[in-house]
Amino acid sequence: MIADGLMGEEHRIFRDTVRRFVEEELLPHREEWEAAGTVPPEVWRKAGAAGLLACDLPEEYGGFGGDFLHSVIVTEEMTRAGGGGPAFSGHSDIVVPYIARFGTEEQKRKWLPKMASGEVIGAIAMTEPSAGSDLQAMRTTARRDGDHYVIKGQKVFISNGQQAHLVVLACKTDPAPRGKGISLLLVETDRPGFSRGRMLKKIGRKAQDTVELFFDEVRVPCSNLLGQENRGFYHLMELLVQERLSSCVRGMAMTWRALEWTIDYVKEREAFGKKVSEFQNTQFELADLWSSALVHNAFLEHCIAKHLKGQLTTVEAAAAKLRITELEGQVIDRCLQFFGGWGYIWDYPIARAYADARVDRISAGSNHILKLIIGRDLLKQ
Ligand SMILES: Cc1cc2nc3c(=O)[nH]c(=O)nc-3n(C[C@H](O)[C@H](O)[C@H](O)COP(=O)(O)OP(=O)(O)OC[C@H]3O[C@@H](n4cnc5c(N)ncnc54)[C@H](O)[C@@H]3O)c2cc1C
Image (cartoon, rainbow, N blue to C red; front, side):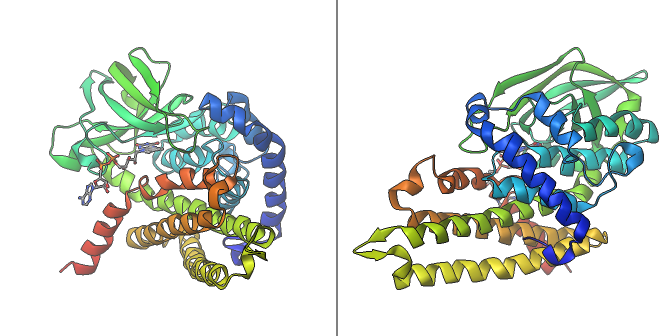
């Protein structure tokens, strides 16, 4: 288990609750939700009632006062079950923290309890058709008109975008170049002028809705500004540390699961009159992958411990996300090979994992961009 050394009895009890929820409420519906491309809203409310959403919120904002380790458990257990279910992590570990960290007291009281209960589903909208890695090139604008902002623009690849009731939107509030004029606005999705585009057909994570969002003169009151005006880019950078750490948790959990599935399979499967596990190649390959997983897990545990103390740096989070998601891809690919043709068939969890995991090297900062962040820091004068 990831970060097991950091967890106490209370975390272990929580793990049992989460595992039961995943087995009873998520797994039986997976095929149906993958076909629909999304999950029904009541799943969110059930997850909220079971304490699986926004675990680290204090009680006064509707949480149960857990910590990031509770989120780690939710992600780990959902991944352990094969992954690909609802995008709870995007809501709990990315969107909620923006409001908890930068929201006014009024914004926190208005939104956080409903986000913890699953009544309100959140999305974060940064990426645009022409601004992904280069976020500072975004074109969506919000101009001031009296005590309102008027938003115009478009976003793409937004997780939970189809279901979201509330979007944390990054947009330009000042034409100042690059990141300087970016702000974050809270946009309720029932406002006139807001619309959702088609659900994008992905190669994996098929039960998670990912959509385009359109803003055609959407008016929001200035009280919907989240954090400081024109400081949005810096707010985004601050919280990317946790977003990247969450990707690491998912990547590591998937790595361990792929190894478990493969170890079980090679002990059963026979070729040339022997179990596949008896070939030296199998033993060497699995020893190689398992020992790499152990080393990466230790670094992840170190990063989680630092994050719990608020000390994880941007560069460490980038390094962890780069290495762990690269390992995840490598392990799943090499494990899949041991399943032969069955590894290519969707019914086998390793096939699903192969498709689901690919995005971990692209989202939350593509791994190329993470190398830039690390390289620049290493070589700064
Ligand atoms: C399933 C899914 C869910 C997502 N969810 C969200 C979400 O909820 N909210 C949101 O805002 N976004 C979301 N994204 C978007 C995601 O964050 C972007 O796809 C990612 O940041 C990359 O941007 P891009 O797709 O525009 O690629 P581009 O920026 O066009 O990059 C194309 C290629 O060029 C490389 N590249 C770019 N710049 C450099 C450089 N300077 N040096 C070297 N290489 C470079 C990239 O690494 C990549 O390989 C999601 C994406 C997917 C696929």
